[in-house]
Image (cartoon, rainbow, N blue to C red; front, side, top):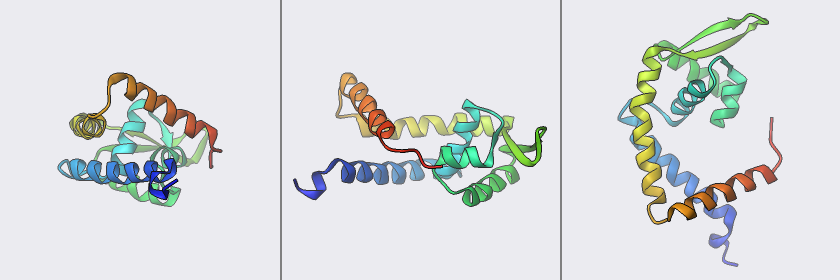
Length: 142
């Protein structure tokens, strides 16, 4: 098998291209891909910790600290101490953060639509199921 036809290589190639296109689209809203991931994660599940958001955005906890500090400084996220552990800060979207996410989501959807344009609806469902099965087959990392 040609190494460039291997599934792992193709997944990485698509991920790199998708990340680049998303970064370009989100830059028009002064957002990075990790920042968008945080806003999306907090919209889906408010009150997440730095560690949880780092896992959701595929970055290190140290990098997430920087991302959250930037979002907080721009008024898109607010952090409060966890009542169960005052050393842990829990993040939530602000109204301004929700508006930023609402502006960014159609831009990301357009990138995804372009990526999937050559596939039928059935192929998109199959691709989604196949990628989910691949992710489930590999061990999760903490």
